[in-house]
Image 1 (cartoon, rainbow, N blue to C red):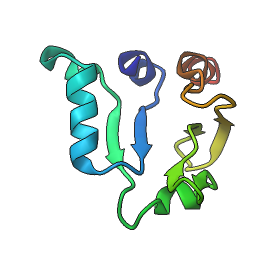
Image 2 (cartoon, rainbow, N blue to C red):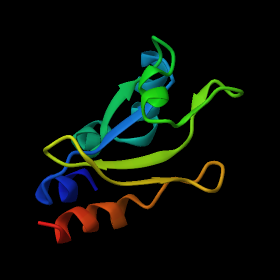
Image 3 (tube, rainbow, N blue to C red):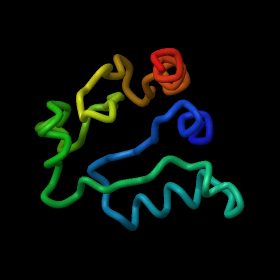
Image 4 (cartoon, rainbow, N blue to C red):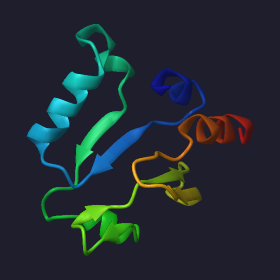
Length: 105
């Protein structure tokens, strides 16, 4: 999916409040070594804990973690699309978002 996003003029970033070692374990478990370039850029919002999530209004204070969300930010740093997952453990539709970016060009 990252390749399609780049072709559409977008970059995929995966951000959560997990620590760097946890993020590394996630990439290792989900992508073979030769596929790591297909993974989204993986960023940690661990410290200051949840600062990025709070800035975007998607930090769940009770659980100490971010709500699964998707933001499309254009080259002017304007949010042109956002959505939150309505089901626990279910990601927003990344493919639809990439298509949205591709069709807006």
